[in-house]
Image 1 (cartoon, rainbow, N blue to C red):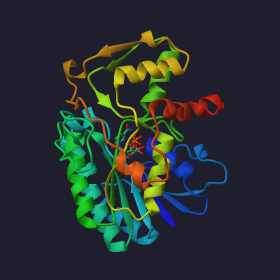
Image 2 (cartoon, protein in one colour; image 1 turned 90 degrees about the horizontal axis):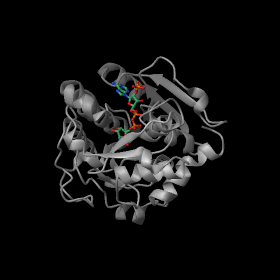
Image 3 (tube, helix red, strand yellow; image 1 turned 30 degrees about the horizontal axis):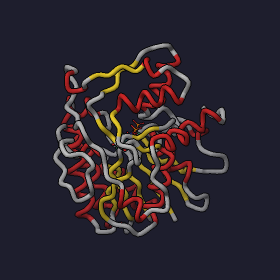
Amino acid sequence: MKLLITGCSGFVAGSILAQAPVQWELHGTGRSEKLPDAEGLPAGRTLQYHPLDLLDREKMEWLLRSVRPDVVIHTAAMANIDLCESQPAIAMAMNTDATERLAVLCRETGARLVFCSTDTVFDGVKGRYTESDPPNPVNVYADTKVRAEQAVLAASADNVVARLSLVMGLPVMGKGNSFLADTLEKLKKGESIKFPGNEIRTPIDVITLGAALNELAVNGFGGIIHLSGNTRINRYEMARQIAGATGFSPDRILPVNSNSLPGRAPRPNDASLDNALAKRILDTPMRSLSEGLTLALSRIVSGEW
Ligand SMILES: NC(=O)c1ccc[n+]([C@@H]2O[C@H](COP(=O)([O-])OP(=O)(O)OC[C@H]3O[C@@H](n4cnc5c(N)ncnc54)[C@H](OP(=O)(O)O)[C@@H]3O)[C@@H](O)[C@H]2O)c1
């Protein structure tokens, strides 16, 4: 089995790579010339790294046709919601157009595509969203992801759209988009941190997520699946639990209404996901917030972080 991961220096990609079965041949793409933090890979795990800007159409095609992966897990994205809002053309080029080209190339080369989408494709009015609920994006980032989802599903019935909830954990390689790492840094410095009490999510730990994505790479499921934790909680209460679990006072976490912050792109209030399908078809167990936090923090306890 030959797996290609796009955006392999990213937060989610690191967990996929770290947990991929040792017999898999691993390939990864990233924008830098060299993998930024190759020593972050577990011992004995080798990755063939390919520099690739996904906006480079010709190089993407050349790479897919020369590597010929069995499966592509597409994690690379312009994932900063506020940046997407201020640079919508680049966001659309990266998140939608590049994904669509990748989906076509995967179909032409016979690769299965597992695409990382987001809980924020929903407008956040109803909450507890199932896979059959219709998306209704409230910001540019979500809009680009919904369009990408459609392209991925149209390219092949074997493809997977995995909608990820807020991801919690520590990066394996590089820094990545880890709010837990940022939060712990600030708590260590003695800072107080604001978290939105109006944003309800079903956070998933990055270790469970990496295992689930590896399983989806080979288990034959096709279509949309929600990968989320079992606990529905607002981000302020979640951050208080994180502070408490890491030995800091929960009082250092302050509530804020994210919709009242000037210059911030709109977010859905309740983007909680229903994970019944994932529980039914995956061997990887979906976990509660406290179970996920224990797993996510195990790297601190073991002295790795
Ligand atoms: N983290 C979450 O809470 C969360 C929640 C829901 C969905 N998701 C989705 O899950 C996926 C992974 O998220 P993450 O948190 O791991 O993100 P991340 O840490 O920000 O990683 C994103 C990766 O995309 C790469 N990338 C960006 N633009 C690129 C381009 N033009 N060409 C090639 N690579 C490019 C980045 O590479 P560089 O290092 O070169 O910048 C980076 O490695 C994303 O699709 C995101 O939308 C994440």
